[in-house]
Every structure is written in C-alpha cells, then in structure tokens.
Image (cartoon, rainbow, N blue to C red):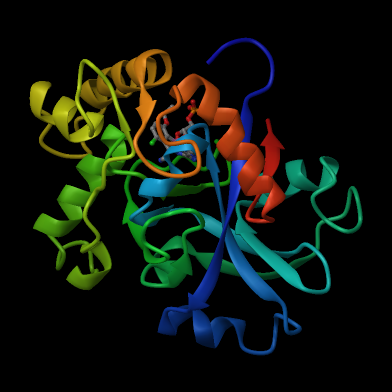
Length: 253
Ligand code: A2H
C-alpha cells in the first residue's frame, strides 16, 4: 500500500436468495429494493473466476438505501465513505434500513457479475478486516492465496464452519496465466510455501505479494472480453466494462 488513496472496484453482488436467518430479519424493511452485497477488490481483471463471496463472522453489516430501487450491504464505515463519493441518492446522508451479523448472511445466494459461475454463495472468512474496503470480499481462489486457503479450509471442515458443503463446491478456474505460476497462481503458491490454512497469515502475506506482482507484470488474460491481453492493460478495461454494465462502481479510501 502506497501513499494516497486506494482505488477499489466495488462489485455489486445481487442477492438472489436470502439465508433463512436474514429473510426474517429483513421482513418489511426493504421497501421493495433489490439488495446487493458490495465487495471491494483491487483485482477487477480476476472477476471471471469468482466462486463465492466472503464476510467476516465477527463483523456487523448494514443494509443501506442507495436509492428507491437499490440497497447495499457493507460496513457502516464504508457506507459513510460511499455517501461522500456520491454513491447514494443524497450525498452526505446514510439511510440504514437494517443491521445484519456476518454469520447470518452466510448461505445467502448471490449473483457474481462477470464470473463463469453466475450464482454463488456467501461464506465465512476469519481474516476479513472491518477497517478495510467494504468488509465484503469476493473470492477468486485461482489468484488470491487467502481466498484459496480459506475455501480449502471450508471444504475440509464444513461442519465446524457451519456451512452446507454445496456452498463451497465451485472449483477455482483459470483466469490468467503467468510464466512463474502457470494458470492458477494461488494454488501453486499455497503449495510452494506450504500454507496449510487461512491461519498461516505470515506466509499468506508473502504469497499474496508474489501472486500480485507476477500477475500484474507478467500475466496474460485467459478468459473474457480481453482474452490474450496483458493483465496490465486488461485490468482497467475490465473495470470500465463492469462499471458501464452497472455491476460495479468506483470506491476509494
Ligand atoms: B482482492 P489491500 Cl484475485 N479484509 O480481490 C481483508 N481483505 C480484504 C478486505 C477486508 N476488509 N477488503 C478487500 N480485501 C481483499 C481479489 C483479489 C484480491 C485477488 C488477489 C489478491 C487480492 C479477489 N479476492 O488482494 O490491503 C480483496 O481481495 C491482494 C492485494 O487494500 C482486495 O482485492 O491492498 C484486497 O484484499 C485489498 O487489499
């Protein structure tokens, strides 16, 4: 992380089917709005490989009105930032419709825009920081070591993590290739650095750094509208395409 603001892509993951815990809590509170989990990413070019979305189990989320038709799920902190960036209909105002625990959202079925899997599930992750981004992380296990390690934890211990195994059943798919790590850098690095779980925070930080640099400087797109192009060029094109299609917006902090 350098000096100055971090420019995220905020990806709108529309709720298709609520987990039972949330359905009840939201009864009568949405005013007919469509609801979206909003995930902050620095790797828009990888969105073709989304397999799920992560929330923190110890994090509280709000459901915020964006306008008459849409509501967004994110942390209150992120909603405050968004309203000063013109994301909501009334700048400077935050209209919270409901509050939700991360644990309650787990199991909700959502759309994953641009992904080869059109609909995926919300799953729990230990290391989601409440102080970064929106508190919602979309998961690309092919290219994010954290996402890959967490998905493997969830598959190994579905009962312990209180998830239905079918929610974690979407396999990682190749999105970009690099000379150093082939067509799925995250599984390659997790193996190479002998990372056993999402709890191996130190090695994961190293893997993340290696994957990020190699992907950005030496990666070539394997899928999507910009297939065959260098990641460095495709990155902003995918972002622009998502924004143009109404499935993402700019978010900075
Ligand atoms: B990235 P930076 Cl494929 N807590 O998106 C923990 N991690 C968070 C977060 C939070 N509150 N908010 C966002 N993130 C993740 C894709 C991706 C990401 C890939 C590879 C690497 C990668 C798919 N997950 O991140 O500290 C999000 O995951 C490594 C740079 O602001 C976001 O981008 O630099 C990234 O961390 C932002 O982290």
